[in-house]
Image 1 (spheres, helix red, strand yellow):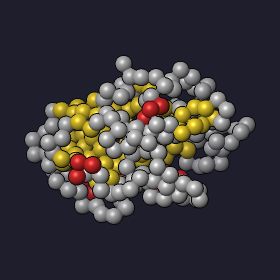
Image 2 (cartoon, rainbow, N blue to C red):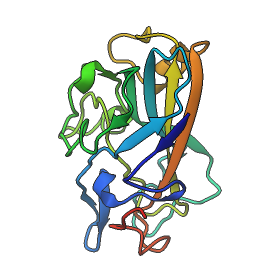
Image 3 (cartoon, rainbow, N blue to C red):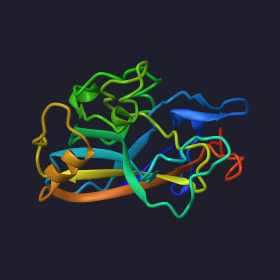
Length: 217
């Protein structure tokens, strides 16, 4: 199975159109357009009954001590953890493309609704749910896609891994406010094939000053 995108190229930068935050010269970060990227796929294995698409960032700081603080940086040596940006399940077995902006075309304070989603699919909560839990203006259940917004003072470029799974079941056995780890566990023993695309993103202008606003070639 092969996953591809017109929105960005594998192992290249993700344009800020698909991000939650973008570089701002005055305040470090401004809200971005937050469109979900376009994806298409082929060479689907026989017996496929549904698809799952997951996006995660494996480069999130394990400790928040230095995150987005003036005069400090998040060191490259700090251990990193996963952060889920999109958990999309029960995609129809006949589907071969997700259009740009089909599932997200902006930022919704307190999060988009769910788990019901377009095309009779379901979406889990992403990890902005936890990130904004203590923010009185932004807290809520963040279902669906919300794009990159890594610390603006991080010393490393973040990777965003989009993985498509072909499953041998039409519906995955998760309910309610499920998350990425719930889906990964529920898929075990049902995965017929998988394929990934990785994009990179940073809000640190010293790392990739020409990245933001670029387009895939």
